[in-house]
Length: 158
DNA sequence: GCCAACGTTGGC
DNA sequence: GCCAACGTTGGC
Image 1 (tube, rainbow, N blue to C red):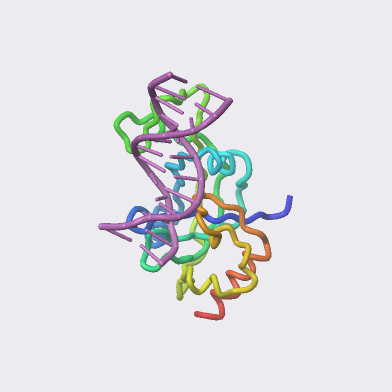
Image 2: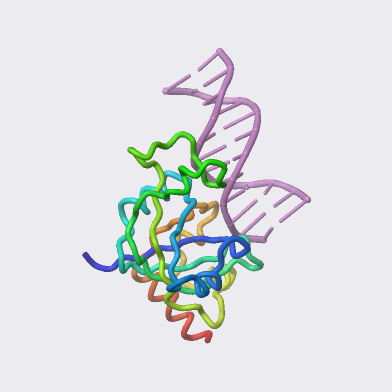
């Protein structure tokens, strides 16, 4: 299957792309997704080798910070069973996991982050899910066209 | 800090 | 199964 592309959101105060750069093997598990739509993508769609756009949400300004690659496809999010943990979910059983995560590996930190305001001015990205009003999904599909456009912008502005 | 959007919960 | 209340996300 052709390589696919995704966008993952993270609040930089919680986990930033710089944190990813410092992580062991520049790889981390993407735990804590507790939304069914996003879960479905993590569980069923993201494959090792897929491209990831790393978005910093709740930043000033919010921006795309760089890219990563899916290092491991969906597997159960063990934090759901850690009692007292922020991501603990009493309703899910180990025999039938509700929540999934993937591993991502750093690919590139953009020299110049691409702010949302800037991205909104780019014609090729008009339909990008990230830029739609009320788009809260924390795991989003990205088209090859959008992926190329984002990389082109990153090269142009650096 | 505000609040629109939207997901989840729970009473009925 | 409806829907009001409530909680969360995340841009502004």
